[in-house]
Structure formats: structure tokens, C-alpha cells
Image (tube, rainbow, N blue to C red):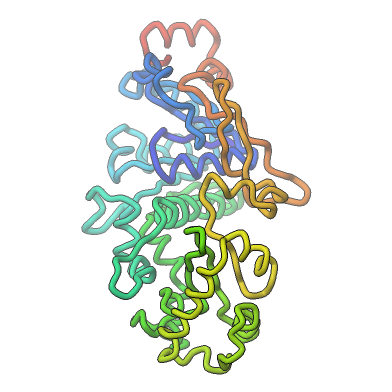
Amino acid sequence: MRVIEFAGIGPAPFAGMMLADMGAEVILIERSADYAAASQYPRMAQNRGKKSIALDLKSEAGREAAWKLLESADALIEGFRPGVMERLGFGPEEVAKRAPRLVFGRVTGWGQTGPLAQAAGHDINYVALTGVMATSMRPGQAPVLPPTIVGDMAGGAMFLLFGIMCAMHEAKQSGKGQVVDAAMIDGVTAMSGLIHQMRSGMGYWQDEPAHNHFLNTSPFYEVFECADGKHITLGAIEPQFYALLLQKLGLGDVDPKRQYKTSDWPALKDRVADIVRDKTQAQWCAELEGSDVCFAPVLSLADAPAHPHNAQRNLFMDLEVDGKAHRQPAPAPRFSRTPARRPVPGTKIGQDTDAVLASVGYAAVDIAALRETKACA
């Protein structure tokens, strides 16, 4: 599978990285103008496993080289604002004429259409407009979400990848490519399906934080501070898990059948908080980890790789880049027969220009001529 990625930021390069992790040949088209200053650019982790070609897409020769790459590819990835690819001359209609089987994958925040399509935005904005950010709101506090993960990577990159793979599967039968319009706001909304089901179909999700255990107001689904200032999480939603939690915490006088009596929550939550503060995070790990109370410590990004479970599953790996070790998440998901390839350091701008051009028929003399006119670097 050959994928052409137009260099950008956010979910598009992450999607390209995941495809490269799984063995796709991902060719990154970067600006030849950046080549001279390439030493100033870090070797981005999201470019691991990719090939880089530096082209001047404003020159006719550079554009023709890009067309040859697109004609040889299965899919295209771009993450620009709506209209940018069209202005470059590589919009869906033009691409369909020269590469009719190509799947055209594009990811934006607001989508290709709609009143906000041309407005700037970031992860925090897309998640807010879907209503999903409000689900993290504690009483009297502003809602908080981890940066870039929910909107950019989950709502954007993952839905772009899913769309590309679906479209490629269909193209094998029809012989025709199509446009995949992956908007972060669409993806985040789709991911909130269970919440909407609980809210409207099951009468389970309550918008009022005081009556919703997911909003960190209950004594059994919350983050608690330990004696050493570190934190643990409890998530004993089911009755049997809640009963075990009460037992482990020494709260034998609490009736587990009153778990969802929300009037009990404030006082009981205070009692649980006091109990948790009596011991360190490590002590609580020793007592609760691996049990059915639904427990995990809150680890920093630096500490997470050393946790025994994460270490045993090799969740992280170190890549040596320019003589330094850089820790990165391992590829996911896992396969029983065809595992993902081990990541290599991110590519440097233009380091594969000659090899990539040769793969689409350019002779060495042709490449030299392109470089002479600065159509490539």
C-alpha cells in the first residue's frame, strides 16, 4: 500500500504514522524550501517509518513529480483547511482525472462544508462544540480534557484511517476512488454515541453533575489524593465491584445497595477521601491493584513506561535519534500473525527524494535536472 501524505500538523501525520507502523509505504511530500534549514527541524516522531521527498509544488516540474507519485499511490492524506489542495491544483476533481482509483483522505476540524469550515480552530474547540467537553465538568469547575487526544487523534486521525481503509476496500471492487471527509467535530460526535444512548434511551446519563457518577461527584468513580500528594483512580460502577471496594476500604457500615442514592454521595465521598489520604500511592497499589475494585494509579508520562503491566506489554519503546534515546508509544493494535514493524526514527526532510523519484521512473540525470532548477531538494 502506497500512501502520499502532504506534510502538515495534527491528525494527518499521526494517521500516516499509524499506516507506516503497519507496513504501508508512506511518502511525505515536504516543501523544498525547508530543505536548506532541515538541520533546524527535529526528526518528528510522527514521521517514523515514512519516506520524505522535498518538492517545490509551485514549479511545473515539481508538480509533475507529485502527480507521478499520486498516480502510483493507493491513497492520499492531507490536513489543510478546505480549499488549500484545490488552490495547489491537487483537489479531488483534478486527482480523480489522473488517478481515478486513488482514495483522497482529508481531515479538518470543522469539515469541508458548513458555516465554520474556513474558521481556525483547535482540538479544544471541536470537542467543545459537540457537547462532549461538558461531560468532563465537575460541579463548580470548568471542564477539562487531555490536549489533542480526543479531537485531533481520536475524532480526526482515527476516523480518517477508518474511512481510508473502508474506501480502499470498496475501490478494489469498483475500481474507483472517492473522497473521505474526516472532520474532527464529526468523529467526536460519533464517539459520544454511548453517552447519547444512556441519556435519551436509558435515562441513565444525568446532565446535572451532582447526580452523575461519570462527572466525578460519586465516592466510587473519582480521582483521590494520597498521603504523598500523588493520586489514584477508582471506578467501581457495578454493584459487585462497589461492594468489594467498600470491603477493601474498611467501610463495612455502608450499605452497598444504596450505591446510587445520590444524597449519600457527598458525605461518603469525604470519608473515602480521608481514607485514601492515610496511605501513599504505592501502598494503595499494593492493596488494590489487580483486584476488581477497578483501580489504577495516576502516573506521569515519565513514570508510565516503568509500570509492570505497561513494561510487560512493551507499551513504549526507545528510538535513538541523533545519538539520543527518545521514548515513544509502541504501534497498536497487535496482530497474531503479521505484527507491526518496529518503528525507526522520523525521516529527515528530503532524505528519500532520489529513491522516491526513481520509483516512479525518473533517471539520475532527470533528478539532477530537477534539483538544478530547484524543483526538488
